[in-house]
Length: 456
Image (cartoon, rainbow, N blue to C red; front, side):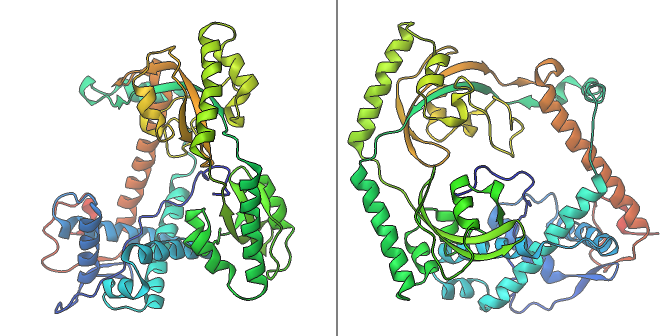
């Protein structure tokens, strides 16, 4: 919640559930890759996990899954040679987050341990650390193999020219949207009540009546960190709201609680956990004043007046956005919204697929004509604050088959991904030739994606 934006390049980890006890099954080694063994139980547990999570299994699971594991072993083997290691702090953060979410989902620590085949929580964590650590190392190894893929416009055009009409990718419908927001007024007494509650929390912590982590878990409105007792994980100043960063980095004693800090997200108290150079791990409790329906209605009335003035040509939408909008991210951009979803092909542009718009806005924009201005409506902004807004649909591009002139950026991403895949495939085929591989009888009759597993 205190991050200003999602961090690009965050480790993409499919966290597998560690092995659930398989009763009455005699385990055996079915593959050996280098000096690493793959067990029957490894395959069976991965199959059960993918089945539960809806993972895609291509063909026979007892061919597809062992080959996936074997490919990972190749990357891990090379990572040892190249001295590539996991970021242990990041591994711990992922595992703690996963365990907390799993406990919340199952209802209690005891139920979670029972679900995991009777293992103790400490053993579950150790198993999961291994899974996450290996996956992180594999991802880093892939990055090293692929390097920095750079393509020229001629590379993209050449790729496009080689595609048949039937294989051209479909480009989803996108829109460009301009927005003006107003924030409903929050009575001073409501803000004072929030601050009084945070001061009460500080007093309870200082008296030893309750720990900061307990209060954060029970009361913090930053649900992501609340599940970890308010812990944010190690972050730099650039990853924090400025006011939060100033307060957190000024703390030197883990036993002291900060004064109340106001950010765009609400009101916080902060506890230092550890500093490491220019990064800091902290706990916080976030509370937000609740906006009343009455104040939301008043803000809608104020925005409705502006809506009438814009339609009466007293000022343009862009002028109104620059003068009146509370949205600092778009105010100086004449109201034009910019896509901040780092996983989107449209990241950093003004284009949005409908599902990438803030929750509740897509339904409204989907029914609008280009140039039309919406009536005022109530949404939560990226900081989870209640705001009222009007939007203008600047442009709409309907779903269509890709073409270079309109969809160069999307095609560039597609070609870059294909190039990375080709580099990794070539590396795997080459690595197979220099790696000891043995597959047990009964596990060889497969149509493998990579043909070099079985050597003549």
